[in-house]
Length: 135
Image (cartoon, rainbow, N blue to C red; front, side, top):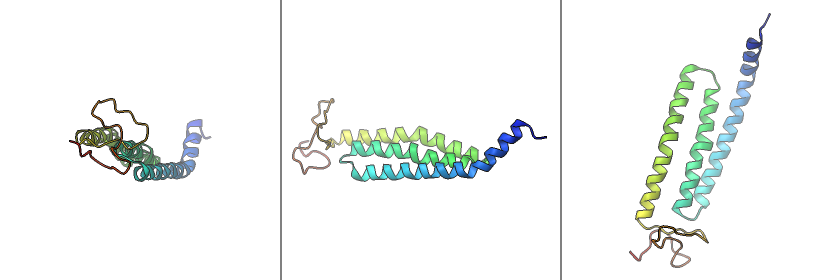
């Protein structure tokens, strides 16, 4: 006679390929939207936001899809990679954002408000991109 735990394990092993496929589709969709955001956004600050979301929505979902295999070595590697990405992604986004701020890159999004007081709240002319030339 099969116990409830064995029945649950059997059901999970039968569904695990489907779960992994769904997680891969979600991950690829998240990465596609993030890359579209990186290409489409007007300035460094908005592009950083899109890029940091790619890590969580895309890569973490792909790591979860790998972990569904129930192989201990793969699960351990996926967890280590996930922890590394979760720890380093915000730090790297902060460093890039800070470098853009120190180089006085202007915000290109209409209606932005610069709370730093450094005059980064819009381009001097509509075609201006990148650092301000007034420094």
